[in-house]
Length: 118
Image (cartoon, rainbow, N blue to C red; front, side, top):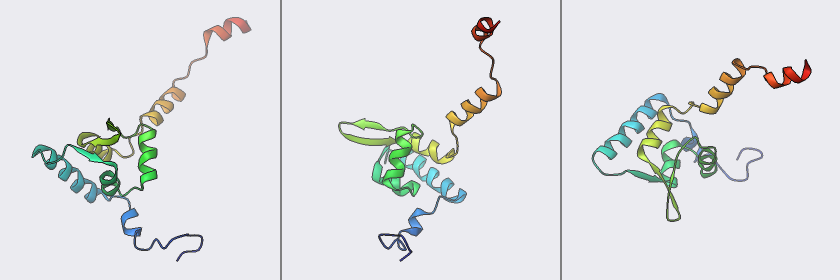
């Protein structure tokens, strides 16, 4: 057991590896195939954790930061197939980061402050 670990995590390390590009392609194709055949349109949180190789806490963080959409049916969250496939394809697509970079690049001075100072 690694120092500082409360539990033996050697058997779950294989599940914690991020998806490779080939794995991403395979998973997205499977999700789309299941949707086309009418097999599965929504995934529960446990299935999404398994597909993405995330822990439950990591998935909830992603949901709470609006990087992945979910639908609440009664009291159960379901992730639509198109949102899951889109997230896998563009994992690093962070709109907030792009917006902040754009705003920093194109900042303008506030004209009202210039009038007060002048």
